[in-house]
Structures are given as C-alpha cells and as structure tokens.
Image (cartoon, rainbow, N blue to C red; front, side, top):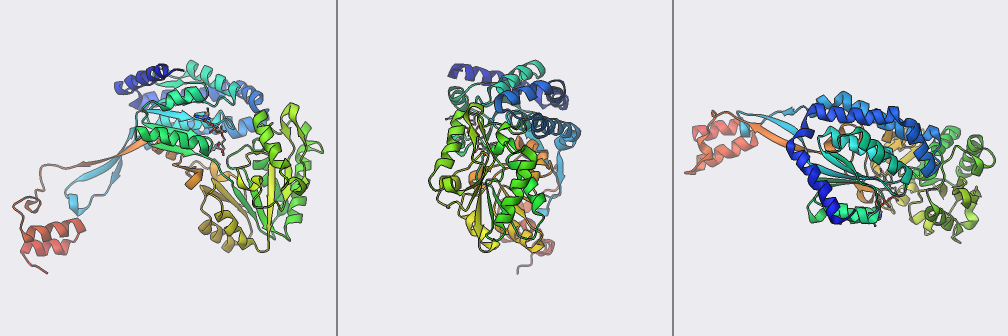
Amino acid sequence: MSQVDAEGVVDGLRRTYISGKTKSYEWRVSQLKALLKITTHHDKEVVEALRADLKKPEHEAYVHEIFMVSNACKSALKELHQWMKPQKVKTSLATYPSSAEIVSEPLGVVLVITAWNYPFLLALDPMIGAIAAGNCVVLKPSEIAPATSALLAKLLNQYVDTSAIRVVEGAVPEMQALLDQRWDKIFYTGSSKVGQIVLSSAAKHLTPVVLELGGKCPTVVDANIDLKVAARRIISWKWSGNSGQTCISPDYIITTEENAPKLVDAIKCELESFYGKDPLKSQDMSSIINERQFERMTGLLDDKKVSDKIVYGGQSDKSNLKIAPTILLDVSEDSSVMSEEIFGPLLPIITVGKIEECYKIIASKPKPLAAYLFTNDKKRTEEFVSNVSAGGITINDIALHFLEPRLPFGGVGESGMGSYHGKFSFDAFSHKKSVLKRSFGGEVAARYPPYAPWKLHFMEAILQGDIFGLLKAWLGWSS
Ligand SMILES: NC(=O)c1ccc[n+]([C@@H]2O[C@H](COP(=O)([O-])OP(=O)(O)OC[C@H]3O[C@@H](n4cnc5c(N)ncnc54)[C@H](O)[C@@H]3O)[C@@H](O)[C@H]2O)c1
C-alpha cells in the first residue's frame, strides 16, 4: 500500500463518517450482528486459519478466540442502548439553575493494529468497541499470522459495511503508510518496540492512543496451598495458553526455596497428565509462530547462565516449530530469560528465603501487564494487591481478570496505556462530551462588571457552594 492508497482509504472513511451514517444505533447494531455472524457461520474457517498460523488446538481456538469475540458482540448488542444514553449528572450551585449530562460521541476514523498471537480475537475485540461507539475503522491485522489475516480481510469484506470498515493487510510498509495518516484514535496491540513507533507517529497529529503491550508477568506461589490446583491453573495459561505466546501468561514464578521442589513436582506431574511423556508430539499445544521466534526461544535456553538450570523439558523440534514445556530452576536474575519478556513455553522459577522478597524482585522490573498470587492467606492477598503495580491481578488463578467484561483490561507503565473490554471498549473509542443546559432565568449580577467587593464575596460563595456565605454577601456582610 502506497501513501496515496492509504490517504484514499482514510479520505473515503472520513466522508462516510461525516455523512453521519455510523452514528445511528441501527447502523452500529447491524455491524455488530455482522461480526457475530462471522463467529457463528465461519467458526470452522477460523479454527483452520488458527491451525495454519499457530497449530492452535481447536479447543483453544474456540475458548480463547471465537467464544470471546461472540460474547463481546452479544454483550455489546445487549448493552449498547444503555451505553449510548447520555449520563445525567448533578449540578452544583455554581451553575444553578441548570441540568448537565455526559454525551458519548464517536471519535471519527480510527485505526486498530493487532498482534499475531490471538490474531482473530485481538483484531475483532477492539473493533467491537470502535463500531459500538459509532466510528469508522481500519483494521491492520498481523502479517505474521497470514492465514488469519487473509480470512479476516475476506470475511469482513463480505459481511460489514465497507464504506465504513476496511481491512488493510500488510507489514511494515503498509503500517508506515497508515501511520502517516491523521487518525482520531489508534488502538495498538503488540510489542513495546513498535508501540514506541506508533506513539511517536500519533504525536505528529496529537492522536490519542491505546497501547496494549506486554512485559514479564510474575506469578508468586505461597506455601500451604493446593499445589495440584495451582499447577493445573499455571499450565492452563502458560502452555495451554498458546504455548506461552500470551501477553498475560505467567512469565516467571517466585516461590520459597522450601516450596520450589514441591511446586516443580506438581507442575511436572500435571504436564505429563496433560501432554503425555513426549509433549512435542501432543496435538494439544500450539507451535511457536515462526523460525525467528523459535530461534529466539532456543537462544534463551542456550545462554550459559541458564542451560544447566533446566529441571524439566528443554527438547525442541525445529521442523514442527515445537518446544516442550520447560521449567528452569534458580536462574540468575541477569540472564536474558529473566530480563526480556519470554513469550514462549519456558518457565523460570526464582527462589527466595521469604515470600515477602517477591515485592523487591517485581519492583525491579518494568510494571507488568498482569501479576498473579497463589495463597490461602487473606492478609498476603491484600498486601500483594496494594504492593504490586500491574495492569491487572488475578488471585489463585491465571488470566481470569481478562475474561471478566466488567473489568477494564490494559497495562500500566511499560505494559501499556488505556484499557478496553465491555463498556471500557465503548469508552475507549468515545469522547465524553460535557453538556450543560440552562434557561434564560437565573441571572446573577455578581458575574458581571462593574466589579465590587460584595460581588467577589458572592462569586466565592457560589463557586464553593457555600449557601451561608452567599447570604452574607447578598446582605452585604463581610467576614
Ligand atoms: N496487551 C495485550 O493485550 C497484548 C496482546 C497480545 C500481545 N501483546 C504483546 O505483543 C507482543 C508480541 O506481538 P507482536 O510480535 O505481533 O508485536 P509487533 O509489535 O511485532 O507487531 C504488531 C503490529 O505491528 C506491526 N509492526 C511490526 N514491526 C513494525 C515496524 N517496525 N513498524 C511499524 N509497524 C510494525 C505488525 O505489522 C503488527 O501488525 C508481546 O510483547 C506481547 O506481550 C500484548
């Protein structure tokens, strides 16, 4: 796509937006229903595309992507009317007599850029918010998941109103052409490195952004818990979560020296019950997305600082781009596996004397997208929630805050800015317009010149909502 093509796409959408078509409730509902149809009429094709891109098991394709998109559509369809309603707010003495409301208005023409790891979900989930809020949208899927990118382009062209919703496939040149345009919002999911490129391009036009980035998500495992349940839940969003290629997968574990061997045994035992003795042959685990990521992952294991720390797994099969679930015990803090986001099937365990030492380790790294704690101790839970700054937290499970549509999903610090899901998606793509209405009554002479001391006292009392002060000023008393 050339610069001129990108300009053409945006100009076309801007004309549609100005026509006012996308603002109506009916248009929004029709487009959300079209997205829902994609999930119900073409689910098998989506499963096939995800298998081609990631060897994603059918179960994960449905649970982590297709059902998530259809649920988000259904909940937007159910709640849209309510979301669109102006929200009445109380007014103060300063504006008396008046009424006030917050009106949600669409932003205009928005760009949604997505990552490859959940290429169906991460494309359509933000789009649901953008459409519900009444915007025109360009979707740029990830070229690194080409089968899903092509399917999204085909299905969206077939189902949605292409005068308002467009898909632009491609890689860096297409991204650059798109980023050179003026947008009313950019919603980006991906790495921090590209997030910086997006943010600096957006700055040229003062375009607001949502950045959904990654980071190293810590998982703290306390003593005296049900280790079998904890192990199963950790596995479910580490290896069963796209082979660890998930932004909210546990990146590393912190536990006590005493607890570590028991935890390792529990994870090993559950891994074997899930994937058998030769996990490389299991059909229930995704592959690594491509050779570049495969080499990066095996490179992390070849690091001298970690190669003798493998206590489970470590096998790989380049021809199938598979890496076995791998546990590393007591890796050094300055190894690459502990300094960069792993985003794959390796799980380092850091041991400490006392569990409270976890706070220092977590705080020594950039703020993560998610943090997890397994404990039976209520005080420890409160302490963790108060001490750990993260995009979101789940206690005694992994990633479940992501599934809860009434919770905002997003990062903090280096893990991102802004949030979405449910009503938060609608809000992410809306401007909250303040509207105050008055009649011609309620004139107050103190507002206007010629100014006088009593007028100043009067205005001070009005702005502070001080009725007694108002009376004093009115009657000419000074304090
Ligand atoms: N917060 C979340 O919801 C979330 C979800 C999934 C992934 N992630 C994060 O995303 C990262 C992995 O995703 P990724 O590798 O697809 O990200 P990426 O940043 O490489 O790619 C994302 C998008 O940026 C484009 N892009 C790539 N290089 C570019 C460049 N030089 N200039 C302009 N555009 C470019 C790609 O075409 C793609 O559409 C991980 O860090 C992960 O934690 C975050």
